[in-house]
Length: 250
Picture 1 (cartoon, rainbow, N blue to C red):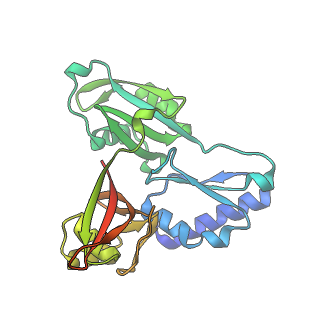
Picture 2: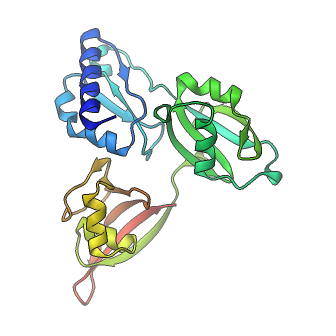
C-alpha cells in the first residue's frame, strides 16, 4: 500500500472508530508503515490509539483506534500466538524464520495477517490475526519436509522473551550514523546510505537525520542487519572517543 493510501486508510479507521464509538484495528503493519502511522499519531489523539504486535519488541504491529477511557470498556488486540512444533524433533530439518513464514504463506494467507515469528530450538512461535488462527492450526502440517503440529498459546511463553548480547563499543561521537557504522561494521558513507534509503528505524520511526543523538532505551533497527538497544554512554577514551553500551538482539 502506498504511503498516501495508508495514511488515508488510517484516518478513515480513526474517524469511523470515533463516530461509531467502538474499537477498530488495522492489519499487521511493517516498520515503514508503522512509521507513517507515527508521523500522524498526534493528529489522532482525539480517538486514542495503541500499538501492539503481541508482545514487547515486535516489528510488525497492529494499530488500535479507540480509547478505553472514552469508550468505557477495553478490547484486546485480535492477535493469536501459534506454536509450530516438529512432531519428531530428532528427525526434523533445521527450520529458520523463512521456512515457517513460507509454509504459512503457502496456505494462501496474506502477509498482512501475519506478525512476527520467533524461532527457538527449531520451533516457531508465530503472531497472527486471530481470524485466521484456526485455519492455520487445521491446515499447516509441514514446514519444509518436516511434519509439524500447530497449537494456540494461551499465554506468552518465557522462552520467546528477547535475548541480548551486551556490548561496549567505541565510537567517534553519539551520532546515529557513527553508531550504526560501528555496530554493523560499515563505513560512515555506507551507514549514511542505510539512513537515506529508509532502512533505519529508531523506536519505530523511520530516520532521515544522520546526526541524531541517541538516548538510553532507544531501539534501533536496520533492515536486513538486525536490531539493538542503545544502553547509554560510558565515558571517554584517552583519545577523546566515546564508549557506548548496547544490547544486541540475538
